Length: 198
Image (cartoon, rainbow, N blue to C red; front, side, top):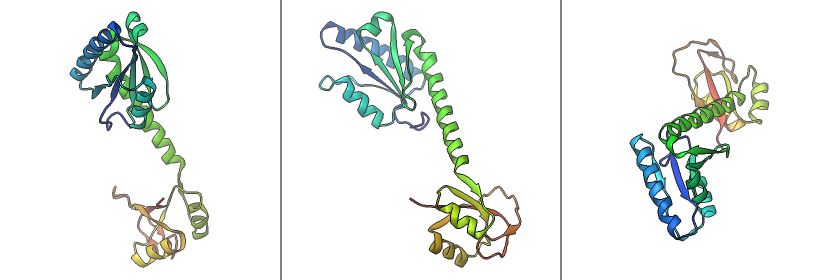
């Protein structure tokens, strides 16, 4: 999930085998949690001891948590955690002392990368069409089709009956784009976006 929407932005998964190391890792995790919560990061520590780390990794990935921190005995000795980004699986060690500053910045980087990828997908799947034949062919490829529409409900229903496409967006920016309706050829005051629902 995008970090701004994710109920849990950062999950810390401990890697331990029990004994004294468990308490040391819990104490370190508590300190990390306090520092992130103070910065407004939605943080959770998965301290369950009845499931292994791999199970936790999978569970939190399925939940869409954008950033996972892994903390084991070797990490603790090195004074770092392993930071794993959900969307591209990039793994990088992160000094514990840098977590309060670096994690919020990482979340913003992830947010920006997800937004850029979504915009690129949207742009790649949005095409302008000028004729009814072009519309009928292009709708088979999916995505959004930008074209003129007369605004008549009967015409829109006919387009839906023939192609299963419906109007998905009528821009409200007030821009006038005079042209012709893609299906009936009557005057159109603006372009609309058609697509199929899947």
